[in-house]
Amino acid sequence: MSKYQHVLWDFNGTLLQDAGLCIDVMNDMLNRRGLKTLSPQRYAEIFDFPVQAYYQRAGWDLSRYPFEQLSDEFMSGYHAGKLACNLRPEAVEVFSKLYARGVKQYIISAAQLSMVEELVAHFQIKQYFTSLHGLDNHHAAGKMEIALGWMEQTGADPEEVIFIGDTTHDKEVADAIGVGCVLVYSGHQTLAKLQATGAPVVESLEEIRFF
Image 1 (cartoon, one colour):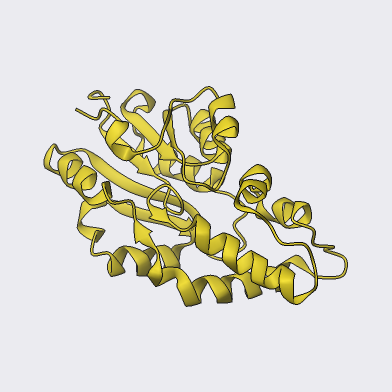
Image 2 (cartoon, one colour):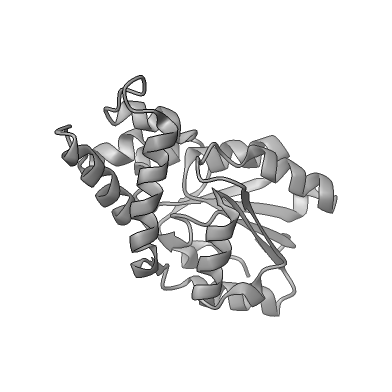
């Protein structure tokens, strides 16, 4: 891992432990309509990007419940609980060590950029990152274009870049921009799904041998 000079971090799940909140908010929405709620296992089996397809697998009839409306409702519940979520306990130590070594760190997120900025400020970790990147909306379509734009903007050598995420989409993004990838199990997707990508899978950031 010592060859990497740029670390691209996904945020939700990878750094922010928010799977439980996502399940709770979705189940509240389903329960209020009399629809079947999700167990953590079922959630991890069906969650994916773009999240519109996940909503359909969760039981939503999008002809009856427009996705944009559901997305707005979900984010209202998410925002109400997001500050109660924690960073991974080992995250700040990892950020600090990489920063001290001169490795540049970035956040590449499918979440709305303003929310990422708010949470980064809340956890007082902005100083570790060269830049933050996210969407201009909260519909979580994915982060492929963001990552491609980052590569074009920086001109970084793909051999010196590692993408650290927690979903199969993160591996797809890493492959699309030609960089290495490590996946962290977070509860947003099953361990089996992550392992099937062929990327190394860890349960703690401390397992990634940066040094």
